[in-house]
Length: 107
Image (cartoon, rainbow, N blue to C red; front, side, top):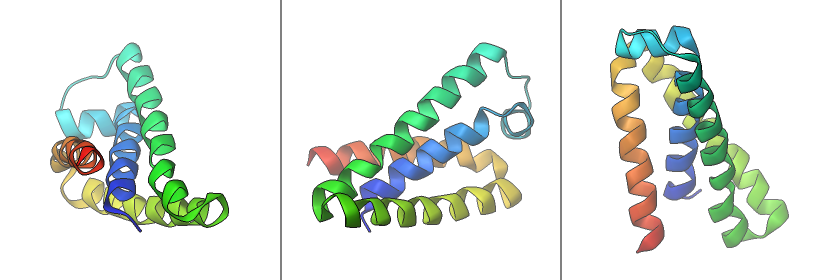
């Protein structure tokens, strides 16, 4: 598993979580607009799709997709646990994970 894939998956799943009005209000204590939810949903799916690239490049298509699914599983468990116990930290950690993924991918 790669750190880049897990970080992108975490950021994507956190964005998908934030696209739901209930989770957005739990984290930010403000109402979410319809446009904001749509943008977060698209951003989440984009990041989840981008999370497949490191695994596929490193292991080929068949093994890379299996690695991608396992990375998403790890990221999903992290998002669920954080949303359950420390929901306000999810958004900051998702932003940090996205920045970390970019830095590790560029270097």
